[in-house]
Image 1: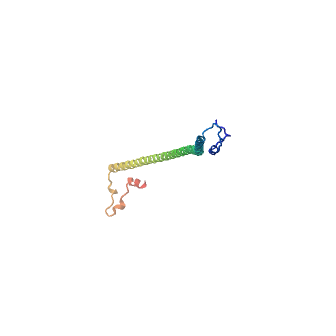
Image 2 (image 1 turned 30 degrees about the vertical axis):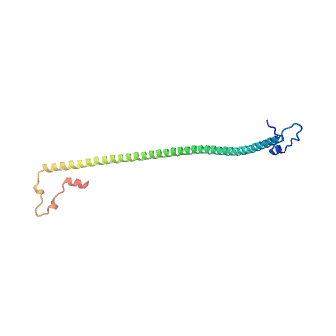
Image 3 (image 1 turned 180 degrees about the vertical axis):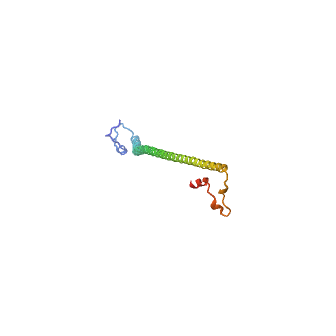
Length: 185
């Protein structure tokens, strides 16, 4: 475990004075070489630690940015889902409205067509009645004409009813009854 209060720097290692060697001590050249090596290694470790700290801060910043993006994406996704739901609901409402309007228009058109059919049926029935009445009247007229022809054919010809040659024929002729009935109608 590293003691936080103890900070040893490469400069501290290089300047540390071990004192003068007494009778038996370490080889000064070896101690100096080791001290330089330890200082160099400590410098490398400090630089590496600083690089790692810098990378860690960059990674933390990147992580924060990613989290913000993730949050923004989640919010956008939620908004898109809500918008999709709203659009779907609106489309369903519009579709239902169009269907109701189409059904109402179809019902109106069917009612109109039924009314037209009724009117045409009434007109056909009126025309049929008129045709029957016409046929009946024409039949009655034809029967009257036939009976008058039969009566004229069976009646004897009267000579005194003939006009004299000196009188104009047109003034003397009497209009037949069947022709009078035609003129009246």
